[in-house]
Image (tube, rainbow, N blue to C red; front, top):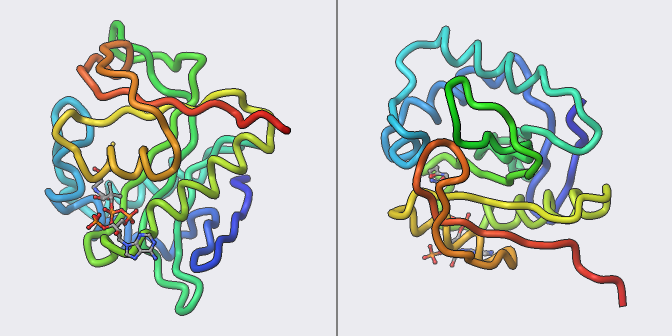
Length: 180
Ligand SMILES: CC(C)(COP(=O)(O)OP(=O)(O)OC[C@H]1O[C@@H](n2cnc3c(N)ncnc32)[C@H](O)[C@@H]1OP(=O)(O)O)[C@@H](O)C(=O)NCCC(=O)NCCS
C-alpha cells in the first residue's frame, strides 16, 4: 500500500477507482505526454485510464509508490508523483535497475504553483527517512520544466546518460543528507 504523505498544501494518497476520469484527462494531453517515453503518445481511451489506475494501485511496497497528489483545500487531484526502480537500457521489455527514480506528471491546470516541487520534496524526504541512499531522475533534454523541479528539490545535474529507458536523458541525482 502506498504510504500517505502530507505537505502544507497537498495530500499524497493511493489512487482510488474514482480517479479514472482525472487520469484520463491528465494522460490524454500532449503537453503532459510529449516528453514521456521514447515514443510519446497520448492516452486515447478511458479503458487505458482504468488499466493505468489499476497498475498504480498494484504497487505494494513500503517505500516505493505512485501517489495521487491532491490539493488539501478541496481534495482536487493535481498530478502524479512516483518513486520506483528505474528501467535499465537493454532489450525490451526493460528490466528494473537497482537505482530508484523520482518522477512527476502534473495537470497543466495546476502548473506554476510549486505543487510538483512541494510533492517531490516530500517524497524525497520519505525516501531518505526510509533508508534509501540515493534517488535519481531522468528527463528528456528538452524538458526544462522538469529539470527545474529536479534543481528546486536539490538534485544535481550529472550530464546526460543513456543508461536508462534506451534513451538519451538528462541525469540528476541526490544522496541522503548526512546527519550532522
Ligand atoms: C514537470 C512539471 C511537473 C513542472 O510543473 P511546474 O508547474 O513547472 O512545477 P512546480 O509545480 O514545481 O511549479 C513551479 C513554478 O511555480 C511557481 N510557484 C508559484 N507559487 C509557488 C510556490 N508557492 N512554491 C514554489 N513555486 C511556486 C514557481 O515560481 C515556478 O514557476 P516558473 O515555472 O515560472 O519558474 C510539469 O511541467 C509537467 O507535469 N509536465 C508534463 C509531465 C512531464 O514532463 N513530467 C516530467 C517527466 S521527466
